[in-house]
Image (cartoon, rainbow, N blue to C red; front, side):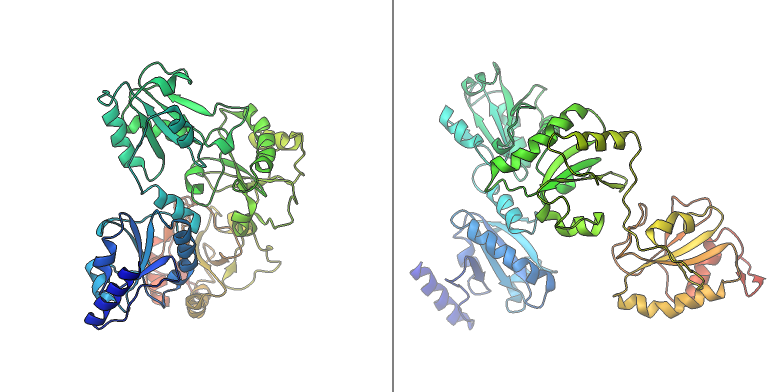
Length: 493
């Protein structure tokens, strides 16, 4: 190591740059002078290209450093300051910050598109090391491989030249970033699980073992990459998976009930499964219904629960609290205390399927007076105002802290006043930071403006035009379902 540091420093001096290798951190600092030399020393390396002034880079930095410490000895993490080393950044096509790339033996191998948390980086990059599928030689190898925090996919074949092995290995190469693969050239490891011919076994994570379902599932279809992918996707989670920040998007592809509590599978497996087993006792009776289930650490989702469900740290106390989020964006919370016998949860699910639950909507209070030209809409009044079948509605979604919204305010007010005598159109606004935005309205920034015309309330039109009065009027003259009434006179379409 000392020799490498000395050589890097010498190269840097020759190139007119200071040495960039730091011995105090686990993140390797690289630059124009030493990138090629040091990158080739590592079989697998994740490089962060950044700028010191970049806010997203600053947010990522501590997570990146934690991941580097956890990956030390297996995957090297490195960083390049593009404000100081533009030649290297330009060479690898870096155009935005932060940009993360995976290098193998110094070669740019692939962009990193995984999670940006320490845990996410750790899990993602661990899967980038070693072979696509680990060769298992003994029963002990199988037990060691499957005794892992994550699930394991194991193929058992009749020999190294087995007819199905090449397809399995191709699948492993394509899916290694998502799942762990291993294979045996003998059928013996599968006999314990009832396998007598070439097949694939899915071992669910040991920490999630329970009496309500099998821990090992056998793949029985014809083996192709597509069929194996579907098999893993449909079976890996089981009846009640552990939802994390990394897998939540995949689990939320369907209507999902989640139990949140002080779950910690790293330090308290028994305590974590105590509540999960009580959830599973109930949900196993609803298997096959159009609702999936999960458990999660409420601390990992605290800000989301506060913002989207109105739940805080004290809700539920030590007991789990329960939410349902549907594909349509509808949200429900179980207000009754979670009972240890699970009966309250059973009643909650039964009420959900019977349509007896009231949706949770984050909303400011409905205004007592709404006499201004621009009508104030909140989530509770959205249907009444915006989805009024007899009126066209132009609605601005804004945030009180948005400078662009403040700049638009006088123009938007003038528009509303200009059209105030027209009974067929409403100019409205909604604080999207403090109210749920309905499905069909994609609000990623502020201000975002939509037009909901008569007869097409389920197909709102996003306004993309200019922000002067004449721009809005021109748009409305084209899109309105009637001739606009301005100052008591109808305008021509």
